[in-house]
Length: 134
Image (cartoon, rainbow, N blue to C red; front, side, top):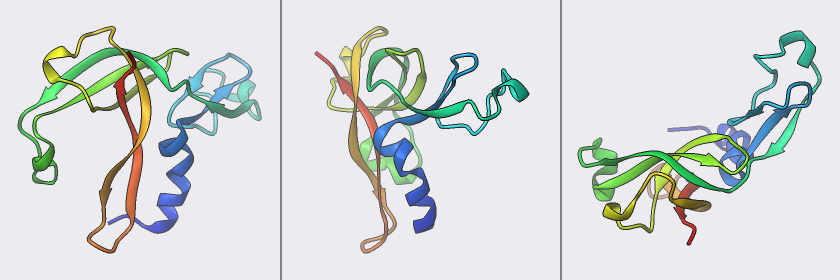
């Protein structure tokens, strides 16, 4: 079970693909970071909020046939590394797609979807998934 406070802290990244960008070197981070590991001291105070592009292409993918019990209802399903149009690699589930038609380089876009819930009356977890962008 996760806490409500943690849910609220993670909302910008999970709901809106909010990351950060170092204004010193131009590196983009998702999930967001407070400091730039490349610039270190030179980047202090220069890491700012950044909206990661919601469109991109499948960089790599895998179709999951055997999964933990909590994902039994979804089997088989696809997960992918998506390279967004601004160069960020994001991992997520691919949905609304025929698993046999997924290809490297396939254009996709991020959508907000329900991920799971903590019981019948618990916190509902939402997040991004990717769908074909045809």
